[in-house]
Length: 345
Image (cartoon, rainbow, N blue to C red; front, side):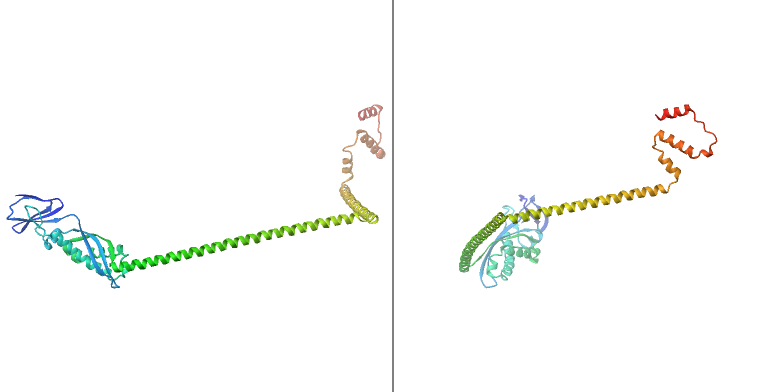
């Protein structure tokens, strides 16, 4: 007959007790009386569980969840669990998956018992994630599962519930705690309201005090201003009521002060004039010293630089007269005098 298996089954085909073929989704012709086959699931398998365990403080809790596993070594698993199928119906002769799931769940139950037994009841009912992580780690490292060729890929804890009586007691305790917290919150709100009201009143009082201080400062300023005005008015009135002699005395004092200022000004001008005269005398003295150091010829040359022509002619005749004894004969014709006179004019 022709036998065909599903692709999600790993088939181990035996003929007369010997393995002749293996693989996923095999199909073959065979004679039923001489052949047999084991169909091992390839896909993941889920197994539900419920454990009743006792916590460290001797309280009963119920742990409900699901684990997921897959077969990694098909021959090893088939050697431990009977996966033989009826070749005609392709149904398992026994219930291997139920037996395998039960064995894995029992191993998980031992691990759950150990973890829960170390926790207090109130801690246990709140430790689903921590419990799942610890048990999954234990299953993945379990030697028995490795010997069966099984790998646990997931472990989920859906609920950890206390016994009904304990749950009611916890609910009552929690309810009382919630009510106490509510009372504390109400008390704190009332205290906060009272404190806020006190702060508001304190701020109002501080504001009133500040306003009164400002008013006081304004009043003091007004009084000081009025006093100053009154003093000025009194001074003006006093000046008005001075006698004629006093006013005359004041005028004389002012005139004296003015004359004193004028005298100081005159002294200052005289002092400035004296200083200017000293400066001019010093300048002239310096110039004369410079002239004294020059030779007569240089001085004469300097003196004749800007002279008029007639002055120069007169000076030349004067020198001729001075040195006349050294001159033998000097003829000055009328034409020469006329030409000199004409040039000078």
